[in-house]
Image 1 (cartoon, rainbow, N blue to C red):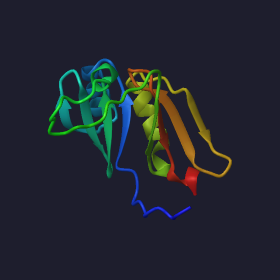
Image 2 (cartoon, one colour; image 1 turned 180 degrees about the horizontal axis):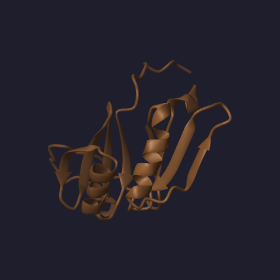
Image 3 (cartoon, one colour; image 1 turned 90 degrees about the vertical axis):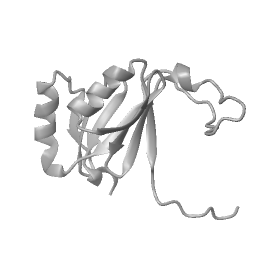
Image 4 (cartoon, helix red, strand yellow; image 1 turned 120 degrees about the vertical axis):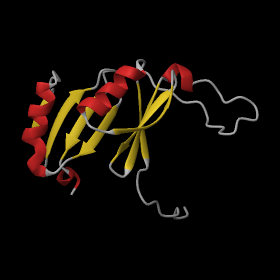
Length: 139
C-alpha cells in the first residue's frame, strides 16, 4: 500500500437541519459564530475558528447538480442527528454552561474524560448532538 499525501487538517464539517433560519439563529445568536454564506432553502454556512460549519437542508442537497453546473458538487444528505464538536479553553466551561442554560439549552452531559479534558454536550434545534470540548481530550 502506498503512503497517501499529507493532509493539513479539517476544513469544513456538515450538519443537516430542516429549518435553516432557526439554525442560523442558534449558531449566530447563541453560539456566536459568524454567518458567511446562505442560499435560502438549501444551506447556511458559518465561520468556526479556522474551520467552516456547513448546515444543509438534506432534501435540497440530495438532488444532483444540473448538467453544466458551475459548481458540480455531488449530492449528499443525512438522516437523523449528527455530531459536531467545538474546542474551548479549559477555563471557559463554567461560563459556557451558564450561557447555554440561560438561553434555555439543556445540557445533556458535562464530564471530564479519563485522559483529561472536559466536554459539554447539548442539542441544536435540529436535534444534532453538539459538544464543546477541551482539546486535551485528544492529547
